[in-house]
Amino acid sequence: MLRFSACVLSPLCLCLVAANGGCVSAQEIAPPAIAQVAAAPTREVPNEPALRAKLSDSAINELSGLAASRRYPGLLWGHNDSGDLARIFAINEKGETVATVNFGGLEARDWEDITFAGQYLYIAEMGDNFAVNENIRVTRLREPDLNSDKLNQEITLKPQQWEEMTLNYPDGARDAEALAATPDGRLLIVSKNKKGSNFYTLKRPFSAGQVATLEKIFDNVQIGETGWLTKLVTGGDLSPDGRELTLVTYAQIIQFDLTTPYNFASLQLGSPRKRDLPLLKQCESVCYSADGLSLWVSSEGKKAPLWEIPVAGGREQVAGN
Image 1 (cartoon, one colour):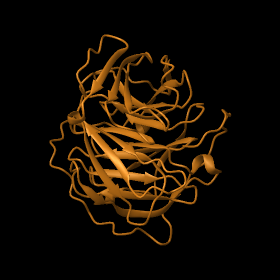
Image 2: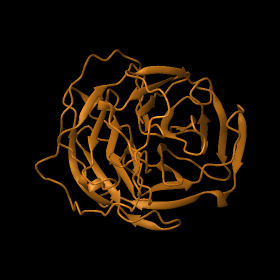
Image 3: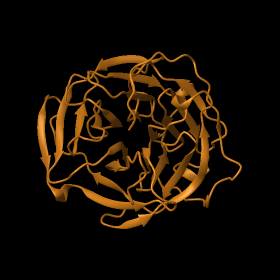
């Protein structure tokens, strides 16, 4: 987590190039067997970034992750950055809080991203500004029961309603804020470092209660050339069809393709599509809509704006994640 005051960002240029050292152990990972059926658009998608709302809940003051609900159409899940309770918020497209979901008995040190894949929400406790924590923790749960038409519900989960897995880096502690997942429970974590980001995967599916070491598949990827605002990765998500990864920095949206769906080792890092973000105080949250046709982004700070942005090129999505 990094805090700074709001500023106006001029158009920025970004270049994404792998370092000469190449990648470390970029073993191909077989994608899950998932039927891919063309998904017909069922809603109006904006042609350009659209400000949909401002978050009305004063408790959401450091939004650091977003994930689109699959069980409740039109709802987004989000959480605060470090210093908050172990809780997530169900937010509608008007910026209203439908429910606050508390994890009874769980502590949150520094939750940095949330994503949805398969039938689960995944939350990663991986913020580590000073690179001192020996491991990271990923919490997984199914979307809890709630009334999507009622506001300000308070829900407390019992420990048996979530699962945890501990992950270690193969090359020592570091800070990270971007998480993505596949429907079969494999994970991608992208580190946050202005000198270059590392891409790590959990090759095997999430396994509750287990400890595993991540594999580094891309080393020292250089993100941005016009200042540190373009270099620090602050959030990420995988498209529902597994064919595109989106990352955000403090200044830009970066989207690049996977040649094999859900196979993180097939990421095409050399040819990303990039766009400047709308004016945001501090963007640390991004997710695909449930149908994959748009992106949702927001910011830290009270009454943060909630933006919907069309996927670059209007790429057709297929069912999956």
